[in-house]
Length: 266
Ligand code: KIV
Image (cartoon, rainbow, N blue to C red):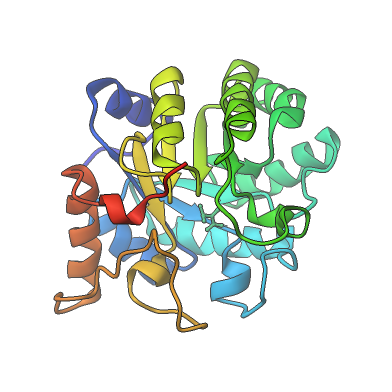
């Protein structure tokens, strides 16, 4: 199977085939997910919660991200590796350049940054310097303390309009991909239609160009014992983890996941 590149992802969007993404933090799961056909492995700062046991992603450092990116890189021969800039790692464009360089040198092919239109200049300058950027909009866990909790974003029309404008502004600034977390299904559909770059969703309905889930969530593992409504446990009915990963890829490709009940209304 050929390597997955940004061109592959743009091609999948162009032909209407859904893109599959899962978080991944270590070599063994990187190989398993890659073997199952997951196109993008996201070394997410969710590792602060699922691996490190923190109650938010804020304590995660660039060094943590680089370590896990390198672990994933060693075992994922064909997947595209997307790595998160953690909390405050892109507070200024200069910090974003230096910290993106660290993650790219650890093995990332693309960097994900949480934010909104204020990121436009940083994204333009990163893209000019050879760093493709995925802009993460909607529920941005690094700003949980500003948002007052992990809440669906864009339910009011004014918020929805802001999200539409921010998404398109970041695409114009040079974002190579967008990721929408916990936004109403209809809003995510509008943004996916309007954007010419791939739009990946989590808790954003089935009309986005691709889907991502946190690996531990989709394997039915949870520290708190609760799982968000947009999660489906793909281990249910499967004999082993490779089968669950394959079931996820098939469900995303055939648009049987996410179902209506995994999404949010306005
Ligand atoms: O860090 C992460 O795992 C993420 C996903 C929730 C999209 O950003």
